[in-house]
Amino acid sequence: MRLGRRAPYSEHERPRLKLAAFLRAAKLPPTPPVIDYVSQVGEWPMYANDEIGNCTTAAAGHMIEAWTAYGQGRTVQVAEADVITAYSAVSGYDPRDPGTDQGAVMQDVLDYWRRTGIGGHRILAFAELDVDVPEQVRAALHLFGHIYVGVNFPQSAMDQFDAGRPWDVVRRSPILGGHAVDLGYAADGRNYACVTWGTVQALTPRWWSTYVEEAWVAASPEWVSATGGTPPGLDVAALGAAFEALTGEPSPFPAPVPDPTPTPSPTPMPSVGHIVHYVSYGTPGGEYPSVCRAAIITGVDDYEAGEGGGGLHIGHVSLAVLNPEGMHFNRAVLQDEDEHRGGTWHWPERV
Image (cartoon, rainbow, N blue to C red; front, side):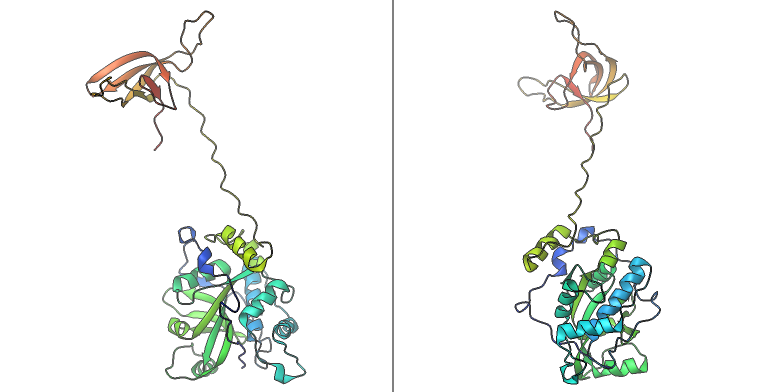
């Protein structure tokens, strides 16, 4: 089995988007206890990663396979030749010259994947996540369908893989090099699972926290379209603006649809028996302030003033006003929904 992940760039060398800046915790959907994006895929190709150090593009091929299986309902296997073509384009690998098999940087693969595509499949954008925050890892897996992971690979993990055992920490085991895998499974109280070298491999949370150096999410059209749009809890407007600032290209995400303006409820017509609020006048000296009192409509004046004046306008009602000291009756009380002046009535405020 071959490795092939080269050391990542620093943020100074190669700026990148950070997923945490665009997650809105209050809007994130609950993370299910089991997130499984591996069990429905029947076969994971080796993609020649047992012969050459193309783990970075092999992992991308596995992610495409998972996205199409879970997002589109039909599994698409990228051809091995396409995976190797992407590796050659990113790293300079020439199959005729074994000395050019030097591995690739994951961020370079992601950039090529976005701009050119792998086997006809392009991603919309990508962002780095914080590998030391398990909640972010689980949320990212749930929202984006697979995670592109870079590890510092120890000899003990190679031995455990050969023996069919989960990857777990073995103290003082030497690091063989960098490796790229794709995470597709997480569950409460259980091991993670990734895809590598043509199979699903379990790894303990302790192994993750010890050896994982970088992890990325990629927005795939196959996945995004299947989930009904952009992932919930993701600030798409801010992400799109940051993408434009970083790349100088238009945002690949559709403009967020604004929340619909609520249709105001029609103003009810007063009728006998309605409960309303009556505003008392209060006293000029302020000994008794103007206050709202509950009142019952006992009559409605539904005619307008005639020629030459006289009569009562629409909105005038007769009220039985309920006071702490007792009840009194008012006639020709004007409705005032705006200023709530003394001597008027209005509909009760909504709580």
